[in-house]
Image (cartoon, rainbow, N blue to C red):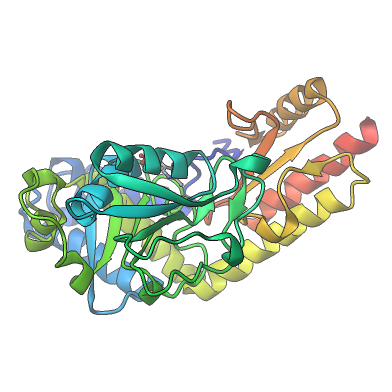
Length: 360
Ligand SMILES: *Cc1c(COP(=O)(O)O)cnc(C)c1O
C-alpha cells in the first residue's frame, strides 16, 4: 500500500485510523450482519452513530446546550440559500463580508431571495487580506452578518472574528471548522460541508442557537426550513448515513489526538513551518496574502515563473506529495493542510521545497 501525502483542498485527506476502522467494520457493522450503508436510518445501530456523532461534536467543539447540531444534505452551497431564506425577514436585508469566491457565492444566493448588502470586501486586492474592523459598514437594520471564516481558494482566514454590534453572526466554516478552538457562543449559526476537516462529502453540519432558530421565517418549503430538521433531529428524511458514520470516526480520531488543544497545537506547528520556509526562501517562494491574514488551512504561493510551478507540482507528485495545484481560478500552488495532514507531511514538503529551490 502506498498512501501519498494528499494536499487536496476538498475532498481531502482523512485520518488513516478512521479509514481502517471503516474498512474493518465495512461488511458487518458491530455484529449486525450488514454494512452501515445498508442499515435503516431508524435502527438502533444508526441511532448510536447519529447521537454519538452529535455528542462528540458538542464535546470537542465546546457547543453550548442552547445550540442544536444538524446533519443535512446539499453541501455548504445549500446553506447559502437556506440561511437567507430562513433569516432575512420579508422586506429586510442582511450584511455580507466578502473575502473570497465562497463569500461571493453566498451573497449571490442571498440576493436571489432577498436584499443583501456588502458590508466590506477585499476584492480590491484579489482577496489577499481580511477587512479590518474599521472598514465594516454594517447596516443597523440587517438581519444578520455573514462571514466566511477561512477562504479556501485565496488562502486567508479570520484571526479574530469581527465585532458586529450584537447582530446575529453567521459563518461558513467549511474549511476550518474544528481546526482550532472557537467561541461558538459568538455565532447565531455556523455551517460546514464535511469534506475538508470532518469527513467525506455528503453531510453538512449546521450549528444554530435556539433563540435565533425561533426567529426563522415561516411558510418555507419543508426541506429548506431549519425548523423541520430541528424538530425531527435531522431525521425528517434519510440523512447521509454513511458520511455521518465516517464523520463520527473522524471525531473519535480528534478525541484520541487530545481534542482541539492538541489539534490546534499541531496545526500551528504545520503553519509556522511552511510559512517560515516561504519567508526564508529569498523570494523564490512568494506567499500571495498579507501576513496577518494567513490561513492555517490553505497556503497559497507562487514561484518565479509558471513553468517552474508546473515542474514543482510534477516533481512533488513523483515524491508522493499530491494535490498541490492552485485553484483553477487563481493558479500557483496551494497547500491544503487540514487536521488529518500530519506534521510529517509538511516536513517532507518543506524538505522538497528546499531542494527544489537549490536545484533552480
Ligand atoms: C468547499 C467550500 C464550500 C462548498 O461546499 P459544498 O459542500 O461543495 O457545497 C463552501 N464554502 C467554503 C468556505 C468551502 O471551502
